[in-house]
Image (tube, rainbow, N blue to C red):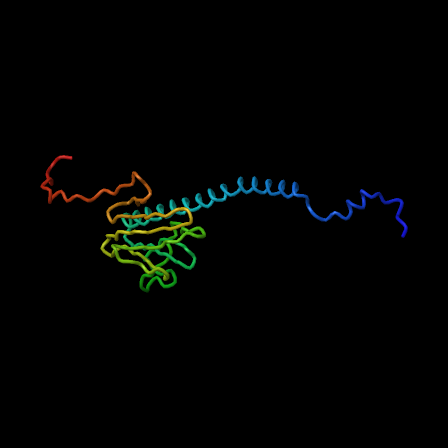
Length: 199
């Protein structure tokens, strides 16, 4: 058998080499570890930021609920659709398709719906301690006499877990994770005998 005189033995060895050396594998693993250490915290902070943004949007929606109830004459409803994880305000108003007919519930055009990020749900909701269904859509309306119920929402995400409460006499919701968020209790001045005192 004749050897090819043009082929160098070192070139032949290089041509048939098919595996990585242990040093190359260690270097690649080290590079991947550095990349993962840089990316994972950013991904976690992005998820936490999304959840915080959704919680602030829910608080804003509850403020709008209280404001629309105080400023308007129409009934307002807090509507939740669990299939799309969306919370929105609805108004009991004239039907645009049949203005002469009865009033109907329709989305409020003056407020934006809140879409919860992936992994975040409203685990429990109650109006004046009455539980809302977990898997079906629900609506918490204001009362026809102009008053409104006490609303409690338990919001659970991948990073955040808290309760948001809107008292029936307050226009500002309170978060359970806010150390300064303490609800004031209503005081009956007549019962205390302080009706005629100067404030």
